[in-house]
Amino acid sequence: MADGGSQQRFGSAFGYPAHRLRPEILGEIHSRPFHLLPTPRMLIHLAFMTDRENGDADREALTRLCRTRGLSGPDRSARHHAFAWGKGTLRWEQHTEFSTYAWDGPAQRTDDSDASGHPFGEEFAPPGDLISGCRLDIRLGSDETEKKALAAFDPTSLCFSEMDGGLARAATDFRQESDGLTRIVILDKGLGPARAGALAQRLIEVETYRTLAMLGLPEARRLSPDIARIEDGFVHITGQLRESAGSDSQVLLDELIALAADLEAGAAASLYRFGASRAYDGIVSGRLSAIGEVSVPGYETWQDFLGRRLRPAMRTCRSVEERQANLSRKLARAANLLRTRVDVELERQNRNLLESMNRRARLQLRLQQTVEGLSVAAVSYYVVGLVSTLAKGAESAGFLRSADPAVVTALVVLPVVLALWWFVRRIRRHHHAD
Image (cartoon, rainbow, N blue to C red; front, side, top):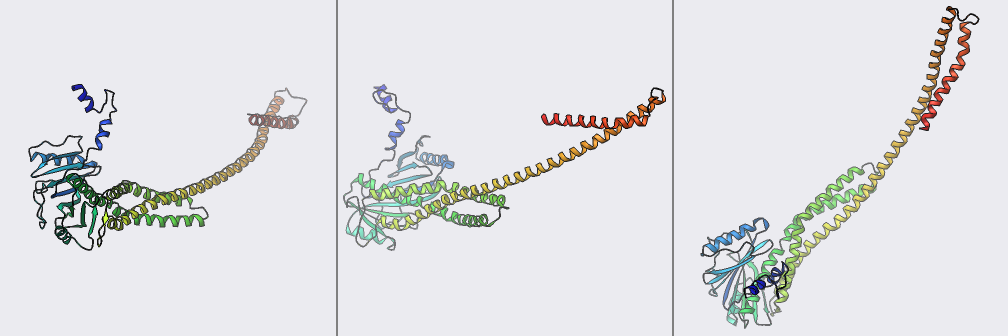
């Protein structure tokens, strides 16, 4: 029995070795179940931004909160935790870039706007900046309760519709009250605890994720002026590229690379934010589809209200992403054209340089041939001078009696010049052969 329990604990079946991720994968779909919520009930849900940099601070804050109740905190690997708090239950969940704290407890009076019994007082240390907060009340549905509930909302943005097959009606105005929370009221007309818990969680997720999805809009607005500046710079560069004679191609290429670097820096900084906004928007759409919303005559539905306000923001984010992508492709094409022009200019300069080197080589060859001719004359002069000196010395010594030294000198001039010319020519041919 102990062995079988161990195998089940590690995700195995029939004793077969289990993949190391199988328990985590199988347990993920049960990690955040719908909670049973009897009617009437009240929930307070807060979401705090807690990215990877302050994820440990989030867990430490929850651990300190647990210790105030004499309880131990969550495990290091846990992503959700629940424990009793007063007459209700506090639930913590950790997500990719935010964490949520949800407390459900006894319902307050219908006209009581100040909730009591929740843990979010002075002893609660927030793990990060608050991004979303809502209060959801589940009440028994009746004409009188419905009238009082709707009277508390702003009629200019009131959303009220039937949900879950007509077993409930839900209302909100998506506005923040004096306590900073968005108010949601569910009127129960036969939901039961399980379906009430599921509907409450979906409506809370609509409020949370629609807020998180809107984080992409300020980023899009921040990037729009930079993208417009880069587009103007790109138009200016392409105009010069078309009109210039090509002398400033390197300067234009440097300016184009600077614009591309600015664009890619902005795209890299906004990549996660826009991707997260798309994902959150998809979750909102999924939750709105799951609640089975049916319009109530005279009131706007949740889906219509968010569609008119959330969709334009998401389209703005997508538009900025598309502008970044299209502009990046255009900058790349223009950079390739400029690089081609720069390469052609470099090749032209290299060709001119080679022609100049060829001209210099020909001049050097001619100069060398001239020097060689002069060197033959000069060497011939010195050789003839040596022969004249030898002839005069031989005459003085008595060795040369039948010939005049001047005649001997004159006779050797032509052979000496021809011999030296032949010798220099032979050397030159040897060099050419090498």
